[in-house]
Image (cartoon, rainbow, N blue to C red; front, side):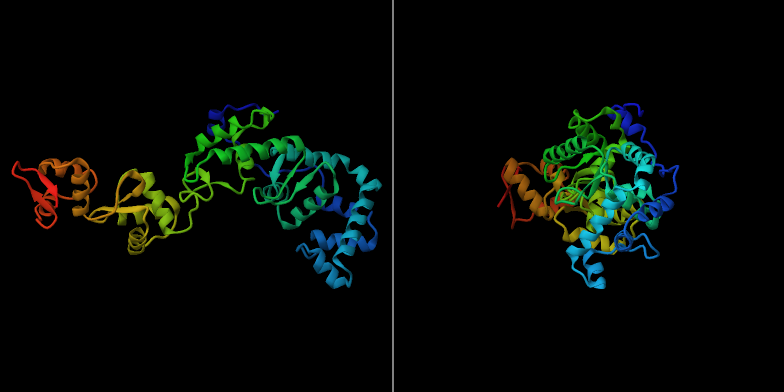
Length: 360
């Protein structure tokens, strides 16, 4: 049995995902089971699950059109064929194989996204089609269709699946629209929501697999997590990669350094000129010096040096030039002389008799 991991251990000791190996030949097993179905049903099952030379799985409509029957009639024949197999001696004799598959699903976390499960069970598309067919045959395996909230998934325990769905919904609700948290924090939060779930499943590999069920929670290339609608999570282009690069750096960056960081961190080709243009257009970035950009969320506001001086004087009241310089340099990476030149422009600022300046 898997040893229970604490949240900290789960982060430090992730288990490597290994391809599942089975003691039976899935192709031979599928062939034996199909033989128990009536010929017409067998033909439809082969096409529906991609079990023949053509690995493409056909829809009910496509089979009906080619066979000259309705979609509903195809569904009836398919259902009758599956029932015939389930009632057969071959199916009863295959019990050990189905139990082996069930143990594999349990090891993967009881409830598994469909695509992840197929990748774990089958080495190629042909092999995965065989396992889709086997899963559909045995009532121990329950498939839930994709919804607005969750991906299509398979599970072998309805109670555990319900707990996971509810925990993911609560976790999503706990995240703000723009929240971005570290992977460590998200896993801790998720563990807090999973108190009713068997501790044997609580390791990093399974937790992340469960998280991937949600269509509303996701991560960015820096392994930060949040709602998939959050700007820092929904990474689509150079602007988003630039945002992550500057945020990771933690202080203003020159646009050329941002382009280089995008290439280094994310293996994305970023031309310097293109990066600069994207930074100019996006309100998430503020020009705070010659080619230097900071994030608006850090408290920087757009505007030239004159605008910053005006904001400082309006907020703090009249002050001498050394005080103005000190405050402005917290918001802009400029030389003292640049600030003084702007401050002594009589169109915008007035020097009082006591040497202090005020906005006109």
